[in-house]
Image (cartoon, rainbow, N blue to C red; front, side, top):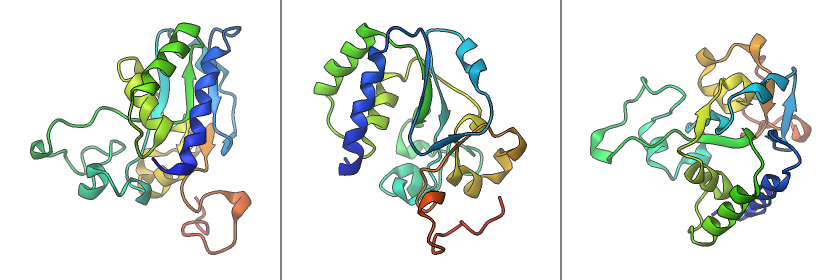
Length: 186
């Protein structure tokens, strides 16, 4: 896996916060612009998150990127049967709604011990672990700027509640004037 993602496995400890019945995890490079408390009212028994975008160069090692397939716009490029079954839905683990649980935490650790490392470390792991209980939520709860750049037709800026500055060159606190896309008005 990419070495700088390894520290992100520490986020598994949030499942230990059993004094709370439901929580919203937010990465440190996220800004919340509107109240999202209503996410706590979503049905129990699921992990809720926004589907990721496969159009950034960080995905260049994947078949999705190589053929131009993105779950944010699945009709643009259809998944060819020659590549096998279509990949399962995949969420960005920078923001998600979950239910803390010690049994889940211990299952996460047990599973992690026998899971080989992957490119996106804990994000790949969480997608694999929660694949059966994952439910997508709208992009406005975790607007990754790459989605705005690559799929503007899917974004209503007036509805955006959470912005995630995870795309390369999207962190405003690191602005140098050289970043691609940072001079855009959107």
